[in-house]
Image 1 (spheres, rainbow, N blue to C red):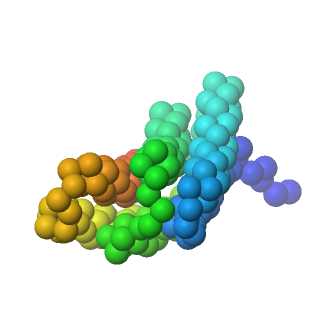
Image 2: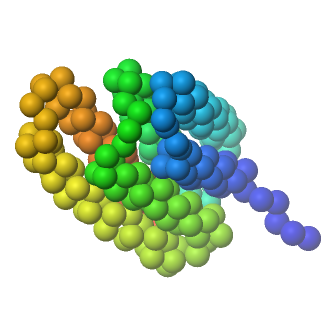
Image 3: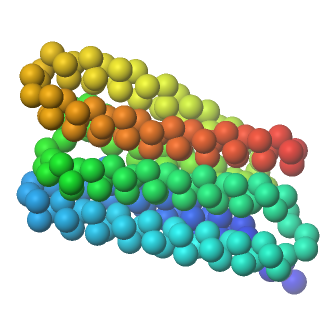
Length: 204
């Protein structure tokens, strides 16, 4: 007789999948007009709403569960940290929409590349966690840390170049906001990776 799948771990996997799909949608969207921006914002909002719904299910299941494979507080923290990634991406898109920015520069494209890579690595790490392959989790979380360090450097370069490229203070503020929020999205991915590393240490 097969063991019944752990409902909470299944939900964590669903949140990770939603986060990864959001990262892909964010990074691969083609925005050429304000109409595209509106559609882009609505799409990312769908991922944000779905993530919130799954986190709510996690809370319900935790309130009913007595014994869990991973500690209750660790499950909830991990779920919320992954949901934070989607929230951060939604905020970036909101600012793109508010500022009417329809073109991403090279630095933004760099951020987008690493955001999608981070969400892919985190999904793989969650898959290892769910299948109790704890030793393999680190293989993916360490990559997220490397991407986060690259994006730290990218942010500094982007802001430094910004003051040389533009004289319009409004444009400078807008781009600086976007750079900082995109880097914050990668920081949110790193926070998920750290949570995973802590959970693995507790369970090995």
